[in-house]
Length: 324
Image (cartoon, rainbow, N blue to C red; front, side, top):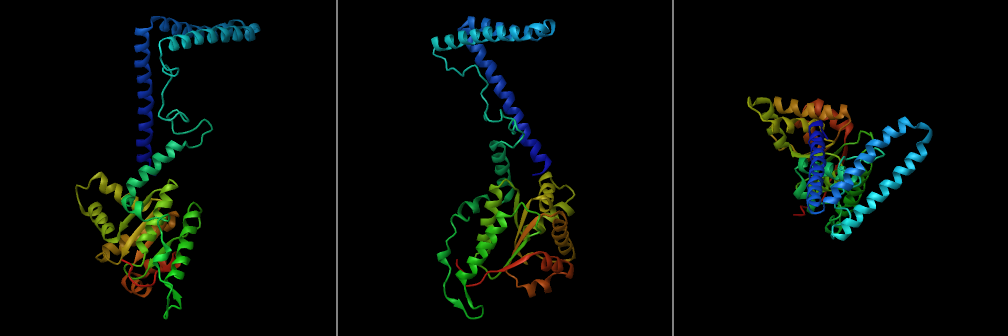
């Protein structure tokens, strides 16, 4: 999560607190107009609070008595307020601050300093917006994964069935999501022909990581090249162009789909290397999906790119017939 997005979220929290205060003042004025005595009671409570500190400073030997006397007075006034609310059929919490989240009082953090669930959900919601995957993962995730669609028939060249192969891949990918927070340098490369489940598995992993509150960016290699061009060559590039380019480096997980479909030249090769290498250096995890074989990748890309992928990615080969 970048700093600009965090600022947006905390500005939203601040606006929520301001609105809660404004709404409370409006409710108070409404009650005061209907029950003038209620304002008198609130004014007394306010004055007692002000005088307490002064009394404690001036009478240090009698602090316990002063505090006890004040407590009794405050309890009596609060009871009078509650009686009036009941008499006029007004909810008991009507004159209390109404936060969107009572656990953190719209601050995002609990009293012990831990992230509130509401903040976690805000981060997840924002991460979903960034991912470009939100619609796909509603249908393609570990919960909807059906192992029965894969064949039990062993493929002669592999001596393993498509189902056996997918069971192994499933296990490794689930482990990837469980250990995502660990600094283990794990990256994945999915390779195999079209329609054998590579994008589906990318989607499964993306949802798990997003639901943990991390940022996930999914882009095809073709779109990544377009992001390069818009940011590097357009004189009047937008803030969105800049943000898209930064996310290629800064997202917690980058998924590059269909590597090999982009138009390759010295510029795109250089930029691809920059992304892959920078993310390795920064410990940012990446998944690459491609229809190319490892041999084809080695031939299509520079030695610098191939050496980084070959030495820092776990290769998972998807086999079998097109399932679509």
